[in-house]
Image (cartoon, rainbow, N blue to C red; front, side):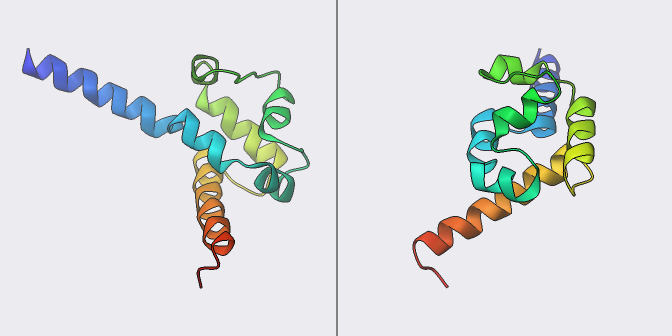
Length: 103
C-alpha cells in the first residue's frame, strides 16, 4: 500500500511541477510581465489567443503543456512554458523587492 501511495504522490508531484501551482502562476504572470514579454495585455488574453480558457485550475490543467510551449514560443522570447514561468517568478520577486525599496 505504501508503494501505491508514493506512486500517487509522485504522479501528483509531476503534475504540479509540470505546470506549477495555478495560483502562483496567475500571481507571477502579472499584467506588467505579460505586456513586457508578449504582445498581449494580460494572461487571459494570452491564453485566449489559442482558444484556451483558464478561469479555474481545472480548466488550466486540461491544457497540454506542449500547447503552452507552442503558445510561448510563438508569442514571446521564451523557449518553453517552464522558462516563461520561471522568468515570471524572477520578475515578480524583483518587482516586489523594488516596491518595498529593497536594494
